[in-house]
Amino acid sequence: MSTKRMAALAAAAAFLLTAGTAEAQQRTKVRFGVLTTASQAAFYVGVKKGIFEKHGFDIEVKPLATGVQANQALAANQVDWSGGGVESTVVAWANGLAFKAYSMYAKGGDSYGILVRNDAGIRTVQDLKGKRVAVPQGTAPAQGLSQVLQQAGLPADAVRRVNATYGGMGQMLIQGAVEAMVGLEPFLTLTAEKMEGQATLLLRLGKHVQGGGFFLITDEWAAANPTKVADAVAALWESQQWLRRNPREGAALEAEFLKVEPRIVEVTFKWLSYDPLIDAFTSQSLQTTSSYLAQEGLIPRPVDPKDHLVAFDRVVAEVKARNPGFLE
Image (cartoon, rainbow, N blue to C red; front, side, top):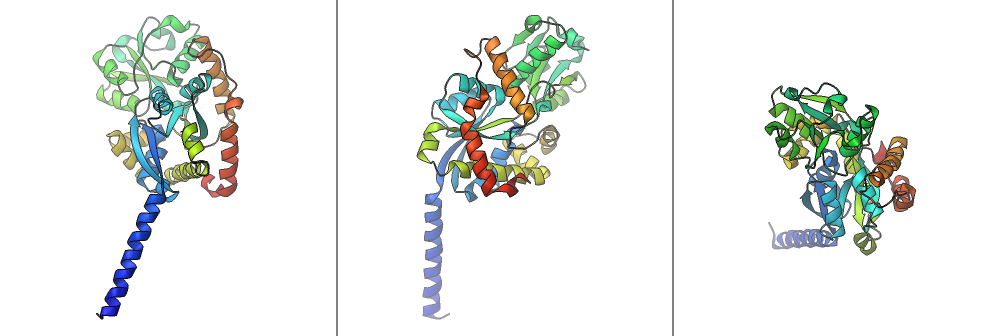
């Protein structure tokens, strides 16, 4: 090879290296709080598949356990983005926390359910009376449990509620510390399998509450990166679309994050819809949830969700106009 040819190749390599470094430097850094639940698979999968990177982001994933923890991390500026369930988002609105919802990351109330020990004699909702029930306070499962009890003619305090995390309640049921757990997938399936026929799913909660939740961004990050908020939502929408089209591969990737077998995540996916838009049931659930949380004393007063979805509506309209194909 001639000296000129070698010099040209070296110059080209240097240019590509410099261009790649410049591109990486131009990506916007984000600390992304991702809950260890399959409902937030679009977040993790979008990072792993390079979709958020393609939209101009340098993502650091920070695993979180619950929507309450996500609220705290966002409010304390420990993360820039995260996902929050319907309930934890309403709590944030009521307490004036400095972050906003810009999209939904998933839907699916039937991803929540009530799993009971077979030796507890629980065959109907009425049989829950007096039983110890693991349920995270201020969450969709907690609200769903209250609605189920009310429909059965029982007061909300008919059961002995034991506050628990989604990941921890299964062990409580296995050990007999509680007779029932109100949780979400994949923990419902994982716990049932570990109990080897000694636990039964009493019912799912999709008729009562909305599952999934909202993509949340801190006001500080949005103010510092005003042109990138719509890009963040577009990246999420593309990630959701990819997940809808590639559920098996997506389940395998999410299983790595959750440290479970892919088939467990596949079971979870059948109860979820990776749809970013608010539908009529979600709107109704937001109103119902606000009233429920105020009645329980978990927020000072009910909130009007419309007052807190102005930014959501604006950004969704912008992204829909720019990237309508992501909703296909």
